[in-house]
Length: 346
Image 1 (cartoon, helix red, strand yellow):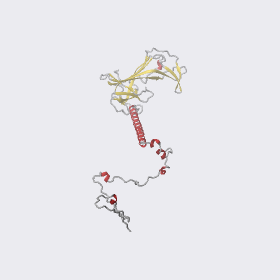
Image 2 (cartoon, rainbow, N blue to C red):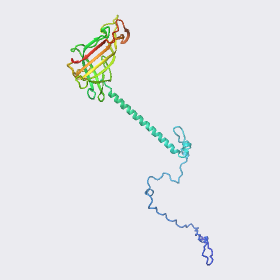
Image 3 (cartoon, one colour):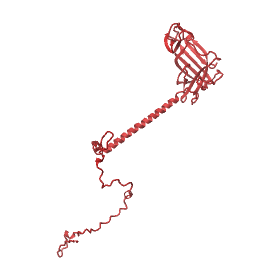
Image 4 (tube, rainbow, N blue to C red):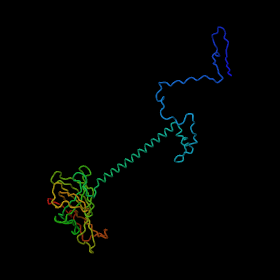
């Protein structure tokens, strides 16, 4: 049953002023409320990204409460720290703490990445420089080295042209091999010339204990453009000589050393060689070196003086006692010499 209450007030005749009670609305108590007003349409001027939904709807509705922090109580960091410890950290809890924390983490990650990149680049450069150094180091192989003349591997044949023994008081302690005339067995040098830079060359010997050995000695071009144009190099070493006769009373094997022996070599480019007849003799290791083809001169020279030579007995391949009996010092200006060449023009 519906009850309608209305309140009315009497109006005085001729009074045009109404009280506030005259404007009270009607209250319906039977539940039949009037229909709500319709929802107005969205404004046409609304921006598209607000009218058209983009992306995925939120996974959790705003009315749903978030999970309690107790869910994450079992989460532990790598050192056993709890999530609440990080959340309650004074540094993080301050205003902007999380932003500062993320910024510091980003800077640290950038520094670590830079160090890793620098390490990788440094190792790559080191390996590249190592490969360059290995490529510049000569190899005993007979394959010609790529480069401009005179780079390459050469078999140089010379004969012994002159011998001098003035630096020692016992001529039997100094000798040169193997022959002293052009008809005998030639002396062979296997040398490798490497181009290390434009117009820069270095020379090395193969591993032959019976010949002077050296590595990466610079070559110098002399008399450029002239008939005597040549590549020149020199070095010093301790020349070992086995005496041709016994120098001890009990005929013990001995070896004499001429310390500071100078080796000088000239590789001519325009002067022809006339020895030997066969210019493509094989090298001792079985491979073929190219013949130099032009004149070559090699000189070994030792000066006299005190302790020239130094002779020792041999005990099972090792040096024993020094032999001094029968030796007298020669003047420092006196020389012992072995001279090799492959042409009559020198």
